[in-house]
Length: 321
Image (cartoon, rainbow, N blue to C red; front, side):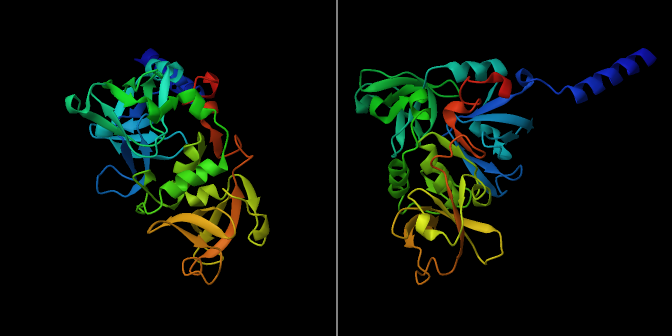
């Protein structure tokens, strides 16, 4: 008994000093178009964020109904098990090195049961912008794809590009604003982060992720990334800069928008819309402008990751896991 206790104590200390290696971790991927992250183990718990089809997630803990996850941006929360497909370390490593396709259609793409005539096929799933599925490009009108839970189907070739091409694209401000403007009129929903609906920081995430740029999730986090632009330096603002607001001059950051030009910005407030940086503007007037952050030119700095360099998505630096 003494020997057993001694060996157990040695093992406990060893695990404390030398934590489990990456290959001992458990993973999951989103298997539905959009999965909700909640702050507790209940459908009634507050939704704090969302993740889309194919997103790799680290499992922190789980029970029979809920899985606590860490998202690629470090965000943590609970997702109902029905929205996820568990992956072992070998499986997730294989996925990172596999041929994959990313949805570039701003309208929802459909995964069909066959590439035949519309009357002879059914819809297997929808895919929102920037969703990731396994598959390779085809010269024909459809590409065969495999979803994270193993379901197979076909998606229009015009709706996808190879994952490496998507993740390697340059940060094009015009395209980012085009995505934001495409969402004009979309409803505001707290915690939402897809083309179905967005909150203020979710609009930023969707627009930048379309160009393969992953930012931190919340407005109060986003103000700390990129190059800081002071509130008094309005004349130096450029298209694509993130504008930050609070209710008072000394309260926490509560809102973010994307700057366009000539004082115009686009944001999600009730719905995705535009307003002006003019105190007389009814929407601007009830908020206090707290400065801006420039993302362009700051890729791969703290809180701004080009997906091609993120080890959860691509097998670039396994030691970083």
